[in-house]
Length: 380
Image (cartoon, rainbow, N blue to C red):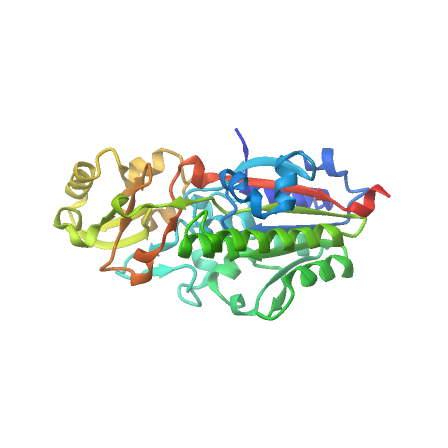
């Protein structure tokens, strides 16, 4: 079994000598232990799926050299389920499975209401620490006296997702005109500890223009330049860990189903949440069995259709805190193949115009890389 996104920050913390941190990924064996390393940068490249590395290598010389075994150390990991950014970022930050931290999808129904929370847009309601109660590794490191800083866009400051994923970090807000590579490098040089950075460019291009598009390759080149500059700027006692939150692929028009234009799929459904590859259906009283049966019939062979209890029993969310159970739909539809279930009556029109998708449990969506780099100066 490959390691998990949940293992990345504990392994980084172990390199930094933090109490209670375990390096399940064997990073110390390759990078060197706490006697050689006193600062670690972790950069998450949104959408850098394991299976996409070969496709983008033509636009990304550093990543091509990693694939060829000429630079860094490449390991395959898996993200958590659903394979979506909010869920993965909080699994990275807390080291916990989605069933434990409660950020169980891109959008979720707030139990006891008809409201759907979009985790990207979430600000104050529900209260951050109630909706996501677990501490993060950023907070744990800072409490242990190891500086943990997050270099993030100023627009992210104060959001529910930022607090859920990075609670307890020392924030270093950036502006759109700032040089992100330089900001992360400056933080690494300023003081020992953990420095975290994030770039959305590749995922944004995949959604809007498609994996393999010219705009996607341009984004890959930008990411590669950022990483190349960071590797070159690493202090002698620093390591760089690059990982991702999910992969993805293009969904063709004929693989799209719209639950809001098919009365068989809409019947008995009260609230729709999740995202196109994983749908959480909260049903009218007494309708759950009928909804599960209808969806199984209409989407037979294109999705696994579970009751909430069946979905939890698969273990795909990890152990589920009973307080989070009601956030999962009464019926859960997990798409297979390249199917996507749109909800044009419930979601903004731009959702249906996306080309690249992710969220479900296929290897193309779940497999992510972990690339470790040592400082070029360390060899001298």
